[in-house]
Image 1 (cartoon, chains in turn brown, cyan):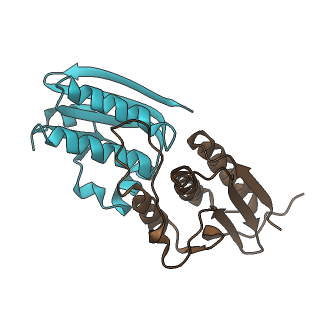
Image 2 (cartoon, rainbow over the protein chains, first blue to last red):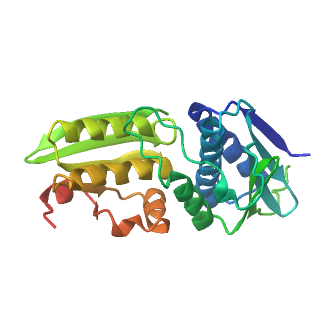
Length: 147
Length: 113
């Protein structure tokens, strides 16, 4: 099972919580301090995207985040429950939820993915009839010896 | 940390000082502020990001939206940022080519093109 699993209502205000938890678990897992900013940003992007997908598709289910500590790597999986009947992930209605007529949702979903792929070397985006998942991983340093 | 916003006028420029985290939750507040400024006739904006701790693609989207608005009035939107972790996000998205990024508010206010 995941080292830490987080589920949160698909609301923008909870994305920050997911970032903080992910960064804390990543630090504990031995992800380099210099990379923690990237972990924080990448998980935030993935969660924002999932929140946007749930909101625009009127899905009440929570967004789930799995934080997995392995021997040599730390992985994060962010899953949404927006199904894709067939075809690419791009076929799903996407975007970040916005209020008011001044919203500019166009391209923000793609920008989020662009940021993730620019930041993370090991990333995989999949989608299926049960929803989509963004998997990302970072190498970890050998655990410090606890006295 | 929440988002903090304050504005001041320097000559014909309006400086928007942003602090805290710009993300999917707080970005609408920044968008509102930029829209309001443009609606009130401020078309030359300097967004000071020195006190921003976190910026994601939603925040980038808002800045691009702001740029689009001021350009419709032949205005400008300049950024002030020296933080490597924030600059990195502009670099990986190619937005360093879109926004003039300055090292100080004084430099941004003095810049013409």
